[in-house]
Length: 362
Image (cartoon, rainbow, N blue to C red; front, side, top):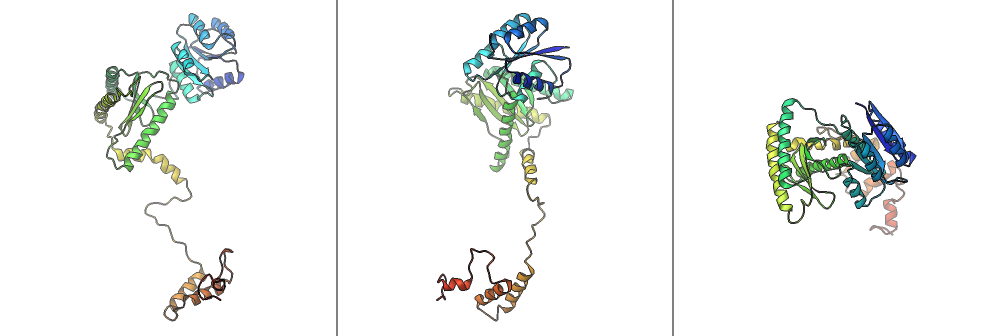
């Protein structure tokens, strides 16, 4: 099925960047059109069916939102992605309320951008792919999706995600208020999950028992490990408000226990030590690139003394009983190795006596 993408921006370099990024997806049967203004974009929309509109919010002439409304008259199913340099929250809300699928600030985060394009056009996801499972496992995950859906309804959340340790969404219900940065959000949350495993190890925990709360943004976010391989994300309005936080966390812990039992029944053991080893493998690889890599059974060899020092030490051992004057030994050593110190900041024993630094001098 042929699909068309229309890119609208009055900056030629932005048009080239977006077009080049779309080319990396190696899209087949996709036509990409460009326009430097809303008026030219409208003209293009009369010639071709438009499936995805990617437009700057601030255009010369009509705005990006006005352009969206006009194109939707001809193409009601068109998906919209806005690009903007405007940071005001009310402007972002205006674009979302108008029906934008995603909004990206400049400079554009290309990974998230391409993921949204794939999802918006219903393409095979290559940026943020789904796990491939057999029919039996898919059926079990479908039951987990039902658990998430019931929980979302009970707690009145916007979205609930079950994430695996590779940062993939294993089951989900609902959507984030703004899914523009979903890939980056999940990647950062799974970094927190990995860190939680390491903290649990340092704290000598046998299981992971922690949760993380983020409040005051587009959503309140609650994030909690379920097993070492899975974590749960809940997004909703005022979930972390003072009057609701205890209820929200209590319900989340109950859901975690249900999911943990379901995942164990599917063969997810939840062994913390194994997961910690996996989480720390990247650190090991980085360490291995250091100056020296030593196996646990190996010992570092001590540096062998020079032949001259070895002879002096042997001589000192032979004379230990004959002389109690340690100064004589080191004076002889100095004569054999050279009277001047190797380090210019060091003075001889005799000079130190003359200067009155140690007893016995003049």
